[in-house]
Image (cartoon, rainbow, N blue to C red):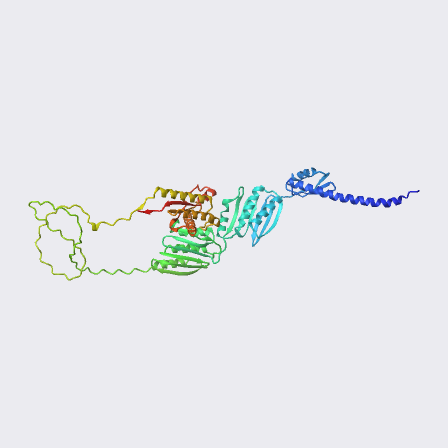
Length: 566
């Protein structure tokens, strides 16, 4: 039988096709397996920038390396993956920049991040900090991968600190050039403005502060007042900037000591042009008055007070004519009334001595003296005469009598204090505390000190307002104070040396009073409590660092027994 090979051909073709399909299907499974195992190896080696793809068992390495040595590391990792035959390196390096900068801007409810970032983990860290710092904001990532970061850990610390400063702004920008931080913008409020102004004191290690152009929050209407009571001056309201505030304080110091000036004004933009000249002029005129007040509201000055005389009032009015032309003046000065001339006293009426009965005084019995020869009998003791002005007619003067010889000196009597003139008994002094009372007071003081040290008593920045985190500790202190009813508890407020001593003294007094008020609301007897501010006295640690100054801003308790009367 003759073989027809054409018939065999029709059977072989389907087998070849079926084999090719099987091989292609196996290639896909093989390539997927190699790619998954290769990517896992790259991730484990910290080379997340690299990507791998396969054609059969031959690999292709791609991506932008962060360092010139990274491509060789990635090749070495892939060559160790089981099943890989050869790897074709098609990697590149990310851009190298000399001025490595990064920036973030805040406007409305949007945060935009720009500049350079060294790698994907750093990008993820920055995005996480931004979302945590600005919940509910739109975070726009415009950062670009680039080489040249000075030190990743230090640089990331600077980025985190910059984002924290941005939370204190209504709108603004922060920028990191290498490791130099700059900030520009408008503060959220007065406390945020103070925090931004002081950010140079808490910079991360290795990061330095460059330019900082921070403006206080805008207030409307812009109001500032100065009150003078004849001895001291108090400022309240808002001041446009630290520079203008210092200018006005210098005007007050021309006539007053630092201790007589209290500045409670908050920073606030929005003042009229020429504000500092107007405020300084008003302060210089106030000190000429007996007392008074000046208020600048936008571009209007109202001055009131009491002048010693018309000449002083007129001098003040003439000086205020030199104020900036953009301001309006409201004069409410008054003059101290002149005292009425004293009327001459009436002519004195003639006086006579009218005998009055002698008050009865009980005397202890005195034995009569022994009779002495050749002595005349003792004359009767003359009665006491009280001289009073009277207005009866003057009787005719009697005829002068011959002078009588003086009576002989009477013998001295024993010094006897009559009962009627004994001085009233003085109020008895308080009894000294017993040892048991002293021990009870010490135990109460130790308990209060232990509770205060174990808990937290915090205030808002530069304020006497208690933080909510302090309430739990204060409730425990109140319960302990109610357990010491027979004591006096002194609440002492202390401050650090940051700022003026006078301002710190006032702040420490206010903070001690805030604690007292809370304890009274919690049920402690107000008569049992005393609040006292010590300012910068008795520091707990030298004021040489931020940590030590934080220790000096504190509340202490001193307990003593209640005084008892005899």
